[in-house]
Structures are given as structure tokens and as C-alpha cells.
Length: 326
Image 1: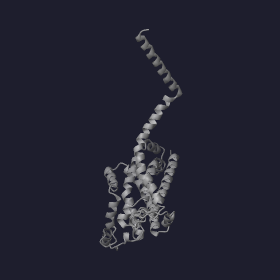
Image 2: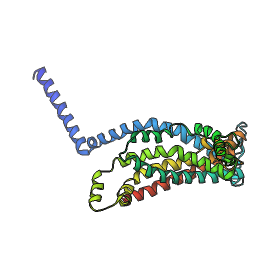
Image 3: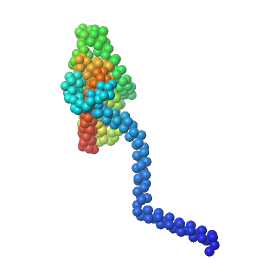
Image 4: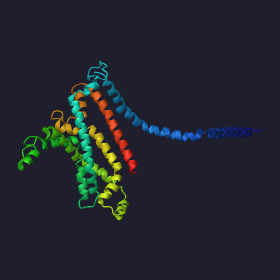
């Protein structure tokens, strides 16, 4: 046999063996599983940066906060001592923290309810055709552009309890005596909530407006043919179709209300007394200003847990309502 024939037979044998190996792997299902595994691994690689950021900026700091909440750490001395749940007990005995918790709840519930009740009718109005509609949409949305910290500094001078305050100056022109405004416990709380509603209602109305524009017009035409008036169309068509938007809006309002800090601090510094103090401000004051990192960390851990529970409950209720009207 010639050398060329020998090489040809050898190559043919190798090809046959490779074909047999490939067929065996195919039958065993290795190749059928590989594309899925490869796709899963590729997707996981895209998640690695997000996971890394989550671990570095959230998981590790949260773990450190839990650890410091069980110690007497003051922010300077690294000679820590384990104190157990002593810091958590102090949270419930500090009047400033308790008042901050109370006002945070009032602020969160008040702004969520008021903004939702006002934003939906406002969005329905802005969705109708009338002269200057685009200008009206821009005007209401503009109120939410400046930060709440800047708004608090501006309204602080408007609601100044002195005679030179803008609100009291206007009242003096009509013969009404000067009002205490942010110097009074009740009025200070009302002013903070009022400004938060005024500043955010336009943004949430814009959010609802986007959902309104996605509702098919055929539904309203059919309802009109069946004799439904405007009120019936609102409650039986518009409102059910806005359930997903209500879920998004209330989620943002609840989470933002529970962690509010900028508006009350710039406007009242938490006063008078601790009447407009918030949980976030209490965490900062206890942990940084007073050097009680253990107490501040304990309050932060409890606040995080409560916020998570409230958000999960809100998401669950929204999901159930969405399924009900699906």
C-alpha cells in the first residue's frame, strides 16, 4: 500500500471516530444543554456589575450598621463593647425620636393621600382638550423641578412668623393679624405637608396623564353609546385602568415620605421643639451630631426594616387590586 493510501485511511478513521464521539455527545444531551447554560452564564456576567455595586454600597454598609447597633460605638473610639439590644431600647425611650417617628407617619400618610386625591382629577382635566392645555401641563410640572430643599428655604421666608414674613404682610393688608405659621406645632406640620403636596402633585399628575393616554378611546365611546355619564365612565373605566399608575405613584410617595429629610429640615429644622422632626433627621442627629452611632445605627436598622415591610405590603395590595381589575 502506498504512503498516500495509508494517510487517507488514517484520516478517514479519525473522522469516523470524531463523528462517533459527536453523535454520542448529542445523544447524551450535552450539546442540547450547552446553549442554555452558555446563555445563562452570559446573562449572569451582565449582572455582575450590578451585584458588585449592591454588595459594596448596600449589603456591606447594612451589615456594618447592624453590627454597630449592637455596640457602644461613638464614631471615634474603636474599642467597642457589645451592649446587646440596649440601643434599640433607647430608641423607644427618646422623646425626640418618638416625635420624629410620629411626624414621619403623619407626613407620609398625609402627602400620599392628598397627592393621590388631587393628582388623579388634575390628570383627567389636563387630558381634555382646551385652550392653553400644554402651558397648563408645563406649569404644574414646573413646580416639581426645584428640589424640596430649595423649596423649603423659599417657603421658610414666606411662612415666617414675624411681621415681615410674606404671608403675614399680605394678611396685614386685609386687616388679619400676623399668624405664627412655622412657629406653631400644628401650623408648622400643616405648612410642611402643604408645601410637599404643592410641589409634587404636578409630577404625579403627569405620571397619571401618561397612563390616561394609554386607555383606548373605544372604551369611552362604547360607554357613551350605552348611556354612561362622565361620573360612571370615571369610576368604571378610568379609575380601574389607572390602578397600575396608582401603584407606582403610591410606591414613590410612601418610600419618599418615610425617608423625607430635606424639606422639614430646611424649613423648620425639625421645630418648633421636635414637632416636625423626622426619622431620617433623628438618625443623623443621634449618629453624627451627638456621636451616638450605636443608637443611630439601631434606629437606622429598625427604619430600614419597617420601610421594607411597608413597601412590600403596598406592592402586594397593588398586585391584588391589579388582578381584580385585570
